[in-house]
Image (cartoon, rainbow, N blue to C red; front, side, top):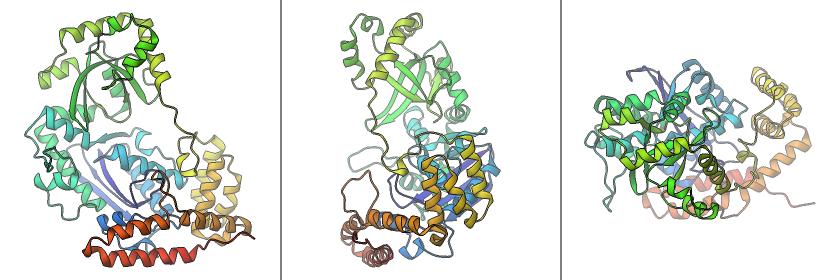
Length: 465
């Protein structure tokens, strides 16, 4: 079974923007529709949507706080219930790995639900965009591709689907985008069955681990800004299914010769482009083919040099360990998360907090207000207080209610130019000025301006006493 899904959000910031619409269609293994699900929700009070996002998705500001719509909490409860009902399945979309999946995880986490539903309890993931990109090289002619003014092949769904026979008048509506994605998936399954079968088969993490475990070279299919790339590699880290990625060495390199260089020289080589060592995600359905499948399906085989390097690396345990050590030393140090929304990966809840999270969803809001104070994980306490404030601020103690209201006011009015942070009201107003350059959007710009003014009035910044 497949669950094709899509989200529409307040903007493109993975950490600070919000899901406003979630749509999904359940299909059988032959991609025949079995069921569908589509929900919208209100905008949270501290979220400022991008004006251009509202224009693209067609969401009018009045819909952002429409009382007939559920809150994010209620929508995600319904989403979780439906997806658990449809599990186990392969969760599939278009560019979901880079955008929709991280945003969906955060929406679950911010509503105190288990965030990793799509990769637990027998579920797996698949992304149609990399398959479309791979098909442009491995199976040219099965799809028509849009071409930019500069002559580059395009892969945007809103342009790809129409030229391949899908009437996509409602592009950027989540349900319409799901329908378009299924249309493209059916073309792939029918016209490039070897690519489709391989992708579906390797969607579970264990299957990807099994392909990379082979002693024979593995064909890696990727796509970058420079176009498609096919290369032969070998996994060298020996970690099996542990962790989320595998370290794969390009067999085009002369590793035997490089083994005679010192660490400093080898680090310079490892820092080059394209990267001689690549981190390949184990649970994101990378497009990989074992040597036998690559030859049978695509007529591709490693060169004599690549075979020799594969055999040499297989014998050199100490050198492989050296490469793993140097790669780890070259990993960039990511800054510590500063804001709550960025702390999703800062640890898993303990068992006691998991039990509290389950009870949170089983009771009513007055009981939830008392329950959140008992969370041992400070992140969960903050998330819970936000949910209670959003549902009914009067359930919180006056001090907590006032603190949260002022925190929201300060966040909304903070004038900054850091794209990694949340969108504030001043930033949105600057974007409205750009929106007004399109005469057809002047009415929408006026509506957004009025909506922002009302939000600003709802959460005034109080001067220090």
